[in-house]
Image (cartoon, rainbow, N blue to C red):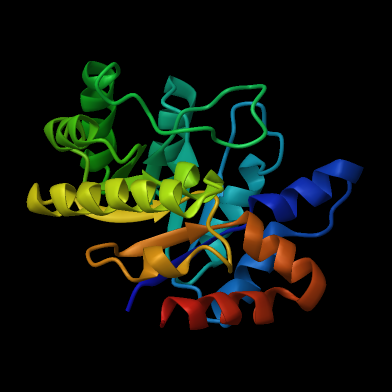
Length: 238
């Protein structure tokens, strides 16, 4: 079955808006697990705008499934990951002024640095994924630098407003999934996916896990985390 990783960043966004202790992303992660989530994802940003170091440390101690740490390709973040040793690290591009991650890593541009950092993370027993565009050259470079997985950026597909444009993006994603699998890369996907647009991605062969945050947290604010996660899992089952 296609797995669901639940990103709880925006539980922390609500907390940080008031600078108080609630809602707690660690509690939200536990509720997501109890509802059937296969893993928990958090993005520890350099500016600590939502998730804090302590959140990640507590998640490492408490969750029972799998912790995926999204982070920028910086010495500070690599050191943090090596100390924490999450189950997986997903390296993502990061801009201080962006509302959310705006695209995939330029793996070709960063290939020398990526190869060095990936080697260090893998030596610590951490599975390494690169958040990348559904571009064949980028995928080939993901393989060359030693990544275990690519997480394909689905944001462009989700932003399309016409059926023709959506189909073009889905075709790009499908070709990227096929190419990655042929190279021996594991394939995850995420960004912008919600209850309305997820069906064509679920129907694709070769994707192992979808990482979804904003739409689940938004739904949870109305119906609760348990129901929001279970409804998404039902869609993943097709």
